[in-house]
Length: 88
Image (cartoon, rainbow, N blue to C red; front, side):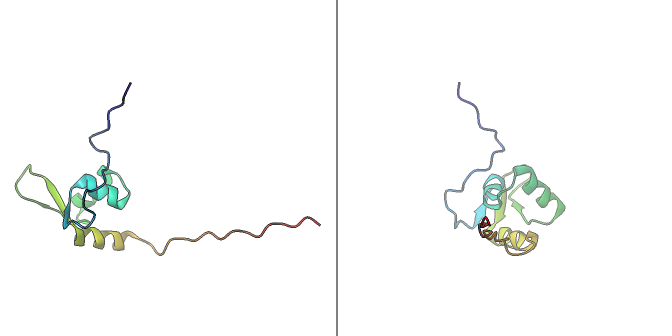
C-alpha cells in the first residue's frame, strides 16, 4: 500500500537559483524541518514576506544566505582516518 507524503515534508526547489522560496523549499535548502523554518521566521531570525494576510510566505535568497551564515558555528569538522595499528 503506498504511503502518503506529509504536507510538511521539505521539497527540493525546481530552480535552486530562484530569488524566492516557499517554507518547504527553504527547509530543504537548510536541511531542517518545516517547523524549524517557521520558528525562525516567527522569532525574527529569518526574514520572510507575505503578499496578503493568509497568503503564501516567501523567503528571499538573501535572507536564507544570511540566516545560514549566522547559524553556523564554524567550518565543518573534518574527520581524519586514524593510522592502522600495527601488531607487535
